[in-house]
Amino acid sequence: MNFFFILAAYLVGAVPFGLLFGKLVGMDVRQAGSKNIGATNVSRLLGKKLGAATLICDAGKGFVPMLCARELGAGGDLVLLCGGAAFLGHLYPVYLGFKGGKGVATALGVFLYLNPMAILVGVGVFALSVALSGFVSIGSLLTTAFMPVILLVLHGFDGQVLLAVFIALLVWIKHKENIVRLLNHQEKSWKKK
Image (cartoon, rainbow, N blue to C red):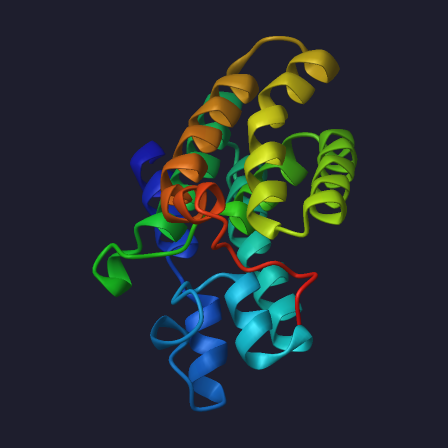
């Protein structure tokens, strides 16, 4: 039964909503912009409405499997594993040959389930980072880096903090190209139209 919960969470997390929304309007978002299936690229290519829809759906992929697992009687550790599985599903979706997004929105859903107060702090870190730098990637990197600390302060050390560290490491790995562009002053800024 535990394996079923984890597998189901992974399969839900692997649904590529950004790609699906792009296909609805005749575009493969993997072929333009940053070539990523996440909300930032969808927003740049297809507009803010579809970008917001992608963000909400990708966050839901992290939140819903954890909520369903809990409602179906899963214990705390299994719920955490479901969150991790959904997150991995987005990064490495079986439907797309294990080539997925960067996981920030799905991580948002996971953290929203774990601790809504942590999300409020995290959104503040994200908004301030993007406002000051002009780069969504910097906001994503700093927010995920700070999330284990935020959870530690708000909740104490437990599995949530370990999951946050795991998520942060993978988000940074998936952003390696962004990091190289930032270091080379080639990253696209929201401040530059």
